Image 1 (cartoon, rainbow, N blue to C red):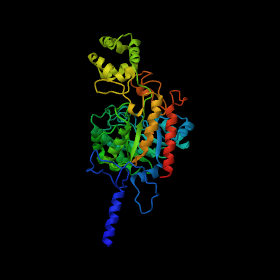
Image 2 (cartoon, rainbow, N blue to C red; image 1 turned 60 degrees about the vertical axis):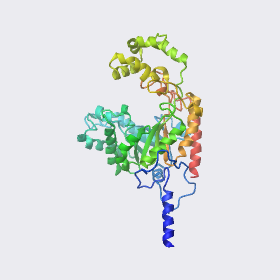
Image 3 (cartoon, one colour; image 1 turned 90 degrees about the horizontal axis):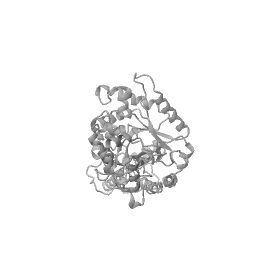
Image 4 (cartoon, rainbow, N blue to C red; image 1 turned 90 degrees about the vertical axis):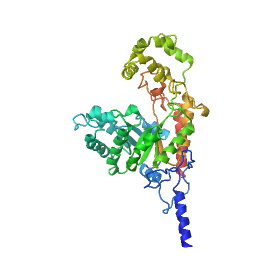
Length: 449
């Protein structure tokens, strides 16, 4: 009889550990037998309080460090009152490379970052700090961070950062989207990116204290995540950046699917490091004709025939991008009207791969305008926070930009229209109120779980 009771207790314990977010502290690998299309337990946390006999999950343990779910925003300004009004408690921004080329002198940019982080901390915000990109080690530090001869220096830099910033940051993300080829210079392979992240994660593991450490991915990628698997044991969390409906074709359900697919691969708490929705980006035929007419062309065919002259008229940022990436002028027409047509015309999406068309989350009534952006957050935030493995999110971003970083246009939706407030920082967009309401509802739910 005693053996039967013991067996039943063991079964109950195993069952209690199954499902999104229900991993114990020591679990590091996902169940390889989970089928891709299998159902995942996405129900909210059990409302009954945990007893001493119940094991704490990895999510429980990380939330003890963070003080609860993460409700944050990328690229904030210093309007602390408004940030708090929305319900945001975390902010996320980049750490500059700390030293001048001599390797000893602290850069002013780093000092400014530290002072800024200190002010957020004084105002009761928690800072998620993004460590320098590989290119910063090369361009500023003067050495290749992927060369094994420089591994000790890379470790030294990241350990210096966490120790020097310990009082002003609560989280650290190791670089940013290093599965995105536009971010990996001077690396040429994703294996180099993975090793660069892993080297730093290992160095941070024993000195991180209460600071949570992890890395993020540009979109869900099984192949990239598999490259990171040897280093997962050093991570407190794994993060995703998702932009379905603007940069990627999909629906709100795709966000949920990717969160849970990633969890099944890593068995670590998941953080949404970036997500958002452009409030512009549905140009009409008249809008497209007006863009061509701005440069003196009656049709795209006419502009293509005069492509060298057109490129010379583009904003300097856009012109430099075209000339750098496409040194042969024969490639310029496709560069402007195919590869970067979303910037020239102001589209949001590229589907199929050889043409840009306007695609939004139409089936959820989420259009690329300010009301559509509000609907996006209103519907998606509660859906995200139902996922037990998700420890929180950072919205991209707080404020609209006045011009696009890629093309230089002031009307390009790709970088100018993501904010909860306009580019002046004064006008609250409808999404401001939608996020405020959604976070308040989530916190109310948090209070009873």
